[in-house]
Length: 378
Image (cartoon, one colour):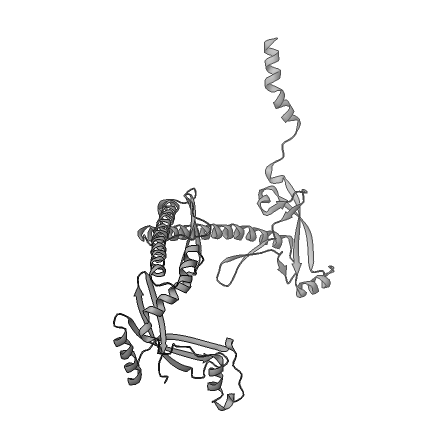
């Protein structure tokens, strides 16, 4: 019993295989569709040979099993000869991709189509090999670029990452020459590039803490200066203020600007008889502009003034004498001759109207007081 059962299990599959006769590989074939295009010459030739003369043609071929690498089968089970997409050499002898079937000037034979499909298959392999080599070369160039950028960044403590997106310990962006943004990520990079996010984050955090400390110190300095100014105003009002000012100061409603202006009046008392610099207004500029024949009827508005103020590069003898006289009267003050160039925005080429003043600066307690006085114009 055991022997019979063993024979049945061992040989049942062989008996079933013997019932189906094997087909030699070389005798197996597949019917496939070949789609191609005819040029105008090809369409004429098709009509002359009894064809339909259409631009798009289709032929059914029988392909042996050993050449199935020249066939594509779609999801619906339709087998087509590999004629589309088409791969061919361009003028630079590079294989290029064209999403169209081949075009013939003469209706092709089945052998022509199979031969072109074989050539297309070979060129497709060459095309993908070229693209693979190019991608590999690009990846190598990108890796070298990222490594070089990383080394330069790590070697220069002054370099900083892009502010947006905000750098983190795991990723950040660096801005290259030309504006290109390069992303660095610890989970993707290797070599020096892998160290960029952590170092960039450390530098940004260091800057943030240093900035916070600077602002804290500036606040302390400003707060101390403000306190010194308040104490100086309190002492000045108590000693020199009018009864009205003293009463308003005690009530906390005396404007600081009023006191500072009174302090300035006292600081520049020696120059009280000298006129203050009033500037050039639009009326004066209009009179100046109308002195030019093309602008005899010009109207200059307050918004038409283009004012530029600088320290005078040169002074006349009269201006020098004026400045020296003021300096003698205010020996502890800083004296600067200033030039005011007022142009007309409607014609920037028109020479500006010039005026000069003497700026006098004195330090009284915690206050830096400045006033500008008129002098003769050129």
